[in-house]
Structure formats: structure tokens, C-alpha cells
Length: 454
Image 1: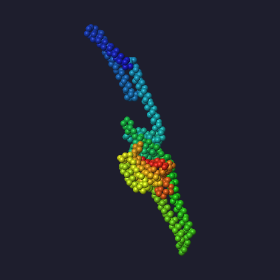
Image 2: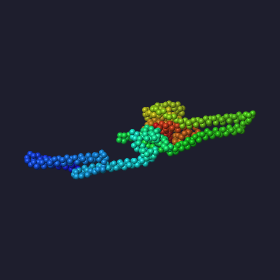
Image 3: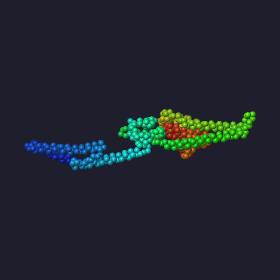
Image 4: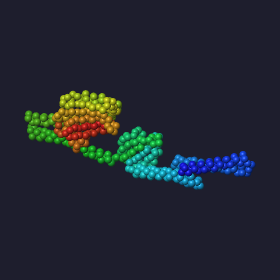
């Protein structure tokens, strides 16, 4: 195509040059005025044709670029009398336009597919821009909130003020739970946000999932578990109390003597009654202690957040537990990935969690050869700060690893020093209100690792 285009220009330039020479000859050597006039007209026409020939390429290129600029791929590039020199150029432009058509068609199909998925997915989705305008709201979200459309995020205030504030304050990757009421129906929503940028503008995509059914099932399961534990612990206390009270009643009925309006008991019976009453008193105090433990579990204070050093936190815990570790013969170690690690949490509550876990570990390390306890802190692969409490005790059976977080559940059996059974439950609750997690991983006969993830 380029060779033919050059040849066309060369022929026109040669013809124009020949014409100019003839015109110059006629002017200088002859007096043929009519021929001169004809040659002048011919020269002008050749110059015009040469300019038109050159401009045809610019016209085609301009059309092509405007088609791309305005995404108008409906036009075609055909010769329309421009000459065979432009056939290949028209063909190239047409092929490029066809490719653009195919790519746009693919993008439109992908967009329609994505729109279909977004509309039919069961999770509510809302996309808002930096100005708080709702760019997208899918069918599930409309059905969930009982609306036909929303223009701005402030429209959510008609549904729930707290929900609106949470959506506005959520950052990318954040998750939260919110309970709202719509038309006298309670909804438990799991909310998650993702932030992204497109064409230089910031957007936030927020998902809403009603997990009320799942929460109710878990709540029922939790209540069943806690009821079983409560019933077990209470029956352990009530049974001997009922038995002893029956024994006292029987002793008084059988051995008491009435004399001058006074009830008399022999020394042996009085001692038996006194011993039974003392036992009832101790068991009653044990039951009260158990009830107070349950009350403590249900009344966790609100965290008082502040920034503090993880190194200093573990140093304080190590200092607090040093004497007890030495008494039990446990070697205590601390491993820090970095001395500059900092947490934003309530240091008092986190200290309580570490103390609870340490005491549990010390109980587990009894009767273990060369017992060792290690505090380990660092940053995990997902960028979260963690603190591990590692012991080389007997470990926890796989079937017990989730049950140990049930309030008052204990694997210590009849050990008199087994504690109240709420330490782990309380510790997990504290981590949850901090937005973190308490996890356990145990290899029976080797080690147990409790992990605080923030």
C-alpha cells in the first residue's frame, strides 16, 4: 500500500513538473496565449488534485480516530472512488474497527453477565462513591431493606441511623454486625466493605447478609450447651445439699427427744447435724461462687482503647507470673518478631486474657517433665498482630478443642484446683469485643498453642 501511495504521488509530481516546464517554455519562447491559458488551468488542476490526493489520507485517519474517540464503530471504510491506492488503507482501518467492535461486544457481554450475577446473587450489594452517592444497589439489597431505589447513603437514615453511620465509617476489609428492625421484623446483618478506585475516583462496595437464622441456630446451640453445663454444676451442688438436709431431718425425727418444751439431742447426733450443716454451708458458698462467676462472665466492661508496646505487655506478664512459674518449675521464655510491635486495645483486659491462659497452661504442665512456657509475638502472613502462648503439656483432645470455650466447661475432671471454667470463655469474649479472635491448636502429647489474633 505504501509503495503504491508513493508511486501515485511521484506520478502526480512528475506530471505537474512537466506541465510547469511546458508553461514556462510557452511564456518565454512563444506567443501562444491560448495554450498558455490552457497550461495555467492544467497546472492549477494538477496542484488541486495533488492536494486532494494527499488530504484523503488525513480524512480517512481523522475519521478513524474520531470513531475510536467517540466509540462509534457503526461506520465503514470503503473506497468510494478514492482510487486503488486507498484500498489497503481502507481495509486496514476496517479490520481495526471490526476488532474494536469485537472487543466492545465482549466487554458488553461481560458487563451484562456481571450485572446478571449482581442482580441475582442472594447477598445485598450497595456501591457508593466518595460523595456518598449510591452508584449501584442490587435486587437483594432492595428486597432486604424494602426499598425500590436509593440515591444517597443518607437515605439509609430512614431505615437505621446506626446502620448508616456504620456504612460511612467502614473501611476496606472491615466487617461488623448490626441488628435493625424493618416493619417490625428484626434483621441480623453481617456487613463487609471493600474499597477500590476506578478512573481516579474512590468507591466503596458494601455487602449485607441476613444471618438471623444462622445466629438463632448458634444461639440455640449455645444455650443448650450452657444449660447442660449449668444443670450439671448446679446438680452437683444441690444433690449433696438435698441429701444432707434429708439426713438432718431424719436424725432429728429419729433421735430428738422432747423435754419441757425443748428438743434435746445426744452428743453424737448433735455432732452429725453440725457436720452436715457445715457441709451444706460450704456447698452453698460454692454454689454462690459459681453464680458470681457466671455474672462476671456476662458483665464484661467496655474496652478503653490505647496504643501500647507488645514487648512491655509481655514483660509485665512475665514479671507477674515469674514467681508462680518458678514454684512449678516451669521454664518461661519470650520471643518477639520485632521490639517495635504496638497494639491498640485495652491493656488491662488483654493482660487478663494472658493471665488466664498462663494459669491454664501452668495447670496443664503439672506432672510434665521439663515443663516450658513460651510467649511469642509477631505479625502473621495476613498482616495481623498475634500473640502465642505455647506450652509442652499433654495437649487437648480434638473433640474438646471447641468445647473448652463453653462457659463452665472443664477438662480437669475432679481436680480441686480446676478453677471456675469461665476463664477461656471470658478470654474469647474479650478478644471478640476487640474485633479479634482467640484460637487453639493442640497436638496431644506434644504441645498446645493459644493464639490471640488482633
